[in-house]
Image 1 (cartoon, rainbow, N blue to C red):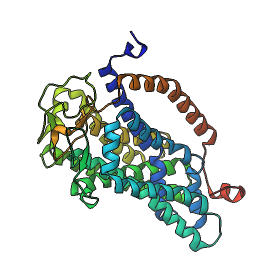
Image 2: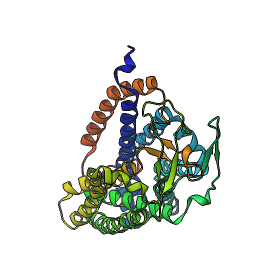
Image 3: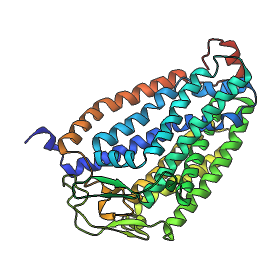
Image 4: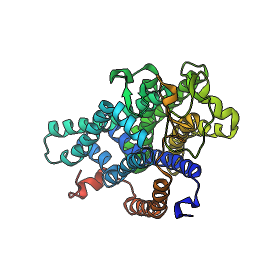
Length: 385
């Protein structure tokens, strides 16, 4: 027996479905508060020195946090090639907008304080807002489209044809998901500022964070209601599927069915913990923002992100990219993965390297932790931001 057969193919697919979720949640948690802080910047800081305080709360770590985005994209490319090919092709213009915004963000960080001119700095502050708000919105819109199904077809040679348009992505439900994403990350960013900033900035962060948490609770509940009532239909496999099959999305039958995204919850009631954790996290964050228990707020904010993203994953399983125009072409965990050998070798590399990344990240945050205030900025003239 060759080494990679130590773990059977179906188990490796499940492991990588789980790891993909870990990477997406890791990106939302780690880079999410950076985006939330950037989206809040023009509104939460009233003077140049206050804006420098806000920026310096994330200045030392934002570059490292963006690595989670690269890891997520790399994992999709290597573990789920059809998902990478179809999603990046179908959402090409949306991806271009996201990448342009994410390029604008580091440029804004680097150039913002190069000149003392107020108009110069104000322009880059709004660039930083755009580079934070746009990805947060578009990522949520993308999730909303995935839940509704993406308009693509596969021919017998598995060549994809995308039948949608850029503006067609912004349906009412997709926009709802986009606004939920923004609310979730703004809440997370406000919690970060509550812990890292002082004075008026921290007070304003509590107010904005409370509003974002309340808005997120309403949007999450409304999204669940639309799924429950069948306004947003789900997908269901109607044929037998071999979990250990080679990649071939057309080797199954599937249908669109109202309430299909709720089937997993009826079969495995423990999965209700995912949406429950989303609500508990946001409600806990909303309550704790009214107190001085700063050390407890961040875990609740992270729990909200974990619960919301996990809800999408467990609702859709085993689908990862359903097709609204050709349901049998939908990509699932079982029929859209890389080969057995590829998944095994990737897992070995992940087991070795991911703990190193996590340990290093924890060490960096420990070293750089502490409050940022106006006195610190004025005293440390070498501060880059």
